[in-house]
Image (cartoon, rainbow, N blue to C red; front, side, top):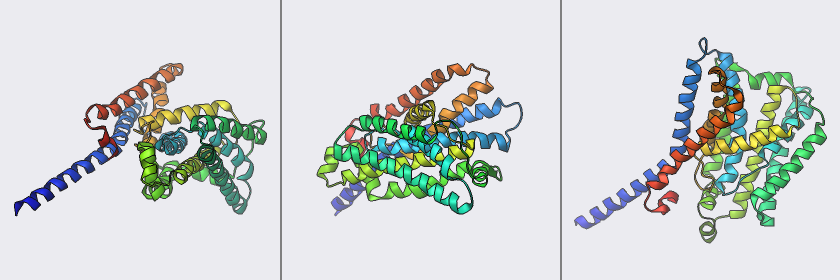
Length: 341
């Protein structure tokens, strides 16, 4: 009579342990990124000559949100085991396009915003389609397509310039009751893009593909559609970032340095946020905090009177520490299959 109870108890215990393992793997990177950002931001606030004002917080939020959106865009391809080297170029393309079409009255501005977002979605979809149907490596495809997208940006903006709807720009970059609108934008992106994607069939498939693509294929996971959607949403998120950049700068600029910096920093933010570059483990929310960590490094150098030239050194140290802390979970796991349960 006691056997079924013991079996049920054992099964419940096993299920609980597996649930705790999945929870730990999913949240560890987010918690580490939040902890690092909290410590760095407290140090930044402590070194301020006066109390933090709403303008200081708003400026920090605007800078962090730019990289956070590009980092979220980078997260989705990484989850399926790829890497998108074109996110910076799409980001710049959206900036140049927005400085051309997001102008005029509210109606034309709305259509301009839709055009920018659709172009970003199209760029990402093209990347995904070439990777899937051409059976090519994501690194090669996105590197080549990034050059194409940057060439289009140059065609749109041979010289920095352009404009944007000032009411929209002011709304996107200001704050209400000390809450930056750029932070609200990130929250809306999480609520209406990331969470629905994460809970969808193709979102769950992305994790399965990144964990073990062959096993996912044998299990009937829609690999092709999941990969294309991951890259398509990546382009969309990068375009949202480009739109925010236009609102901050009131102009567009086709600069290769901007594209390269945001691409490389997005990879760093993804790693700091706990997303595995091997795929299958991570979260766009962790990448948001990873991006704010990357941005806070530069602010700390300023308030501590350290030569800004040394910023790559300190960014590298923070990145190395985050990677090491994230890899500790592998050393504590005896059965590597627990990583994907």
